Structures are given as C-alpha cells and as structure tokens.
Image 1 (spheres, rainbow, N blue to C red):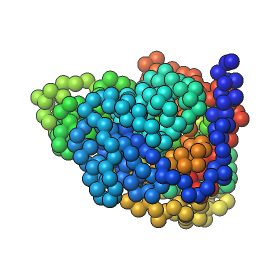
Image 2: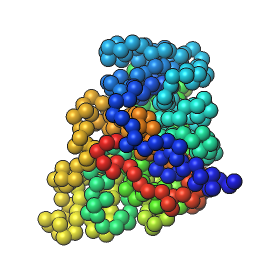
Image 3: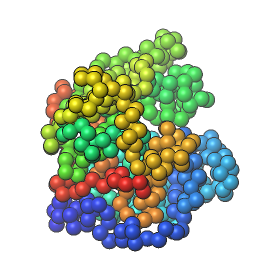
Length: 450
C-alpha cells in the first residue's frame, strides 16, 4: 500500500478518526482528562496553570530536569488547591518513565525545540493518542516527516499549540475573510518581529536580561534557544505568523504551500548587545552568530496567493507580528490597526480604524468564552489553545489543528535554511498530506465550541 492510499484509508487526513465516534455521541459529563506535562519551564508552567484552573482536567504527572522549574510548578498546584502530580526528574530521559503511566489520556510537551520530535514519537509509541506540542515540530525536514508518519501509523492526534491562531483580532479577521469582506484573498503577510535579546541572554538568575550569558550559565530559554542563533540561519520561528493566515486560506484543506524562497540580512544585533551589556572582552563577544538579523521568506500557494514572512528577533524594535490580509475588495493590517474596504470605508483611499469592524465580526469563540480568558496568558490566547486540545481529547475527536498543519507551518524553518544556503534558491514545499489537501475541509473554529 502506498502512502497516499494509507492516509486515505486511515482517515487521519479527514476531519477526525474513522474508528472513533463523533463529538455529538459523547455525553457532556465525562471523566476528567488525565494530562501529563513533559517540560514545565516558564512556557510549560503557563499551560499547567491553565490546566489546573479547569474542572475537567486532572494533571497526573509532570517532568523536568530543572529543580527550580519543578519547585515553581509545585506552587501552581498549591495555588490551585490541588495535590501535586507525580514528578519525574533527574535524568534527560525521565520523560520516558512518565509515558509508562497507564492512566494518561494525553501529554503536553513544552521543552527545547530539539526534543520535540523524539518526545512526540516516543509518546505515540507509548500509546498516547493525543499529543499537544509547543512550537516547533522538529529541527530537520526529516524530523517533520518522521512525526507525520508516526501519527499516521498510530492513528493519533498531534496538535501544535499555536496560540496566535486564537488572538482576538486575528479571529475576527478570519470571520471577515470567511464572510467575504475582503473579497478573494490575494496576498498575506505575517512574522515574528520581537526583540528577543533579553530572552537569549540573562544573568543566570532572572529569566529575562540582566546579563549576557547563555547555555549552562544561563536560566530558562537562554540555556538552549541562543545556540540556534549561533549555528542556524533561517526563519527559526515562523508559526506565530503563518498559522493564523494559513487558516484564512485553507492550507492543507483545499490549498497548500507550493514553494518557498528566503533571504537573510547580515548579523550584527546579538554581538552588539553583548558588547553593550557585557563589554568587548566578554568571552561571548568573540562569538560569530550565523542567524541573520532579519530573515524574509516568500511562499507561493497552490491557489495563487503569495505570503511574506519575516523573522526579526535580534534588533531593537517594538513587538509586532506584522499581519496583512489583502484581497480584491480590501485590506487589513495589524501594525496600524486599520483596514480599508472599497465602497464601504467612509473615505476613499484612506485607512479606517479597524476597531468597529473587529467588534462587529468578533468571533463566536471569543463572544462565548471571553470571560474565561482572564489571567490565562498572552491576552487570553493561551486559554483557547488549551481549551481546544482538552475538548478534542474529551470528545475523542480530531484536534482543530492537526499534525499536517504542524508539519507545514514548522517545516518553513528547515526549508528557509536550505534556501538561504543555496543562495536564496526557490525550493519545493513538501506535501505532508500525500495529496489529501485537495479533499479535506477546513473545520477550524467554525462555531463557539472549541
């Protein structure tokens, strides 16, 4: 049996599991979802905190190699008034022991990027049918194929926990797109434009800034994330930008990415940050960083749209994901919080404040659950992404963002590295669905449930 036939026969490429009942066949009162957390650093703790707020979730196990992170997590259990879960620690492979627990319904992975693919595959091999993973899916293109094939083999759901897909303005614009306000979509833009210098370096005590250390001398993300800037040159973090706009143009569901080309600027920002804050004699001032300060990627889609992505994390700048959605009838941009709809906007050829439109087209999910997002993190987005994952587990149905979405969004990184290495050559984008993108339907956020 060839791969395409396998995907079609298993039904994983369709809306849900062929072997599982639909959501409607499950009663509202279900036993609590039993979650295990692999990685409870600062990002994992955010998911843990949100999970502990839910009455339909029981956190049965947590795992980390950093005792300080485990202690911080224990405080979250105490604050929630819930007993501390089983703790797995002391060994980089302690997560494998966690997966031996028979009561687990699902796991959430929030570890350094290089661990994601082996941990996802290990979870699948252990019989876990639902895996929620932080971005990215893997490092190499082969990592992405390995995860997709493993999810297909075990007929399991792998959901990337891309929270920006649930940002309130983004979901309102998704609503506008689906109602035809912008006409036929022609061009989209997004990215990760976020000064991360204080994230990539710290003093080993605080999570953000205070010094220019990374690796073993640092704390939190600086222990691992900065290494990627030394050795890699590409769009290292594309999913915040690409995820939301991929949903707007039905990527993997009637449309797909066809090709990609990337360009990288010279690298100056991280070196200058080290010199400014640690002096030119600091050992880290002698390092050469491979990552270009601004990486620009162009993607061509099967239905004719173009997408521009930018990765900009090493220079001083205000935060922006740089969204732009442009169609035959109008355009929206998040940077100026404005839009223009031909024949509708009050003044011809002038931007209009987007707020009235965002309020009018507020997504049903936000209308129903907005009050539940208080304190959930990232303006409420973190509530929705965990909510979607937990609801899928409870109902034993497909996650709204699946392994094919995770692979397509995350594969932009190794493909951009390849393009830059080849002198900005256009590279072909793999079809992780094996041709099923032509037949699948977009079911993301169609109502107010999850």
